[in-house]
Image (cartoon, rainbow, N blue to C red; front, side):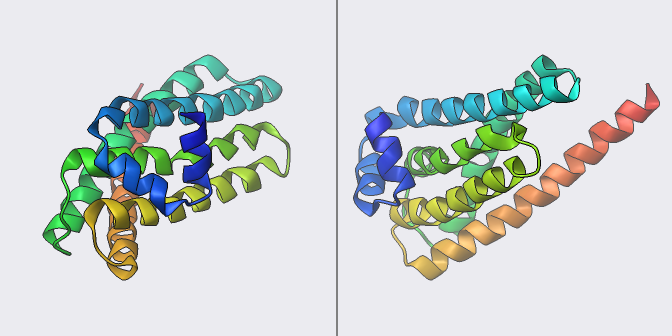
Length: 176
């Protein structure tokens, strides 16, 4: 699995083709997301300890939100890719390839480093987004332009959903 994660981070197209075609890797792809989320969450936990916050609750919330976000993200990519751009894939193919594309986000671990940690996390996020374009392109069997549009539309949808959820929880927190 670690070898596959390295290949995914190196944007190895053949890895994404292998993962797309092998339905036995579905659980492993989800595990990649869990591992990346946990390692990134540990970085956040360290940052919380250094800043005197409540790090454990932040770690658990981050893990839960990452996993829920992953499944929603995959659904949005699948729906946009098949409906708007007529890609050919099933949900599992997009789930597997996108799971491995999360690998570069492991750089979120370094978020605890003052002044520079956010940059490592940003680089990891952008890198994962680029890996996501490759993952979507390979899973949905269409060209790079359609993959970029699918990911961009999906990203905007996820941004709006995140803002709405954040606003709802922020508003609820103010009530109590």
